[in-house]
Length: 112
Image 1 (cartoon, rainbow, N blue to C red):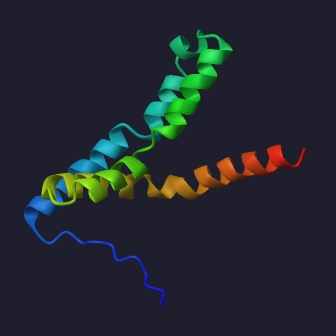
Image 2: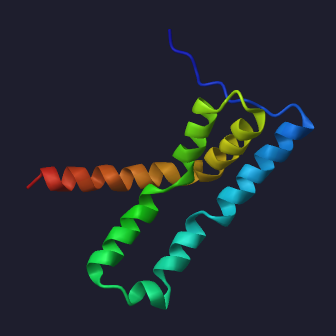
């Protein structure tokens, strides 16, 4: 039997506050921060090996999965759960394009 994923909806003021904090934290330290780092003179001054390593680390450290893990492993702590949910929701729009980029990279390497 197939069942859709049921997404929680905040029903208390505390849940709304922590969801909002998670969303705004994700927005503050999300994609724009990554782009600012990569466009900085400091980053451009690094050698290509370090630039590539840092770019990959920034690509990996996206907050959708960090938020999801907070929800899974600390779900019994209301504030942590809703903060994690906010992180997850903020980053979800970027996930399909990012996964497509990763899978395209894998397919191109396997075609050789």
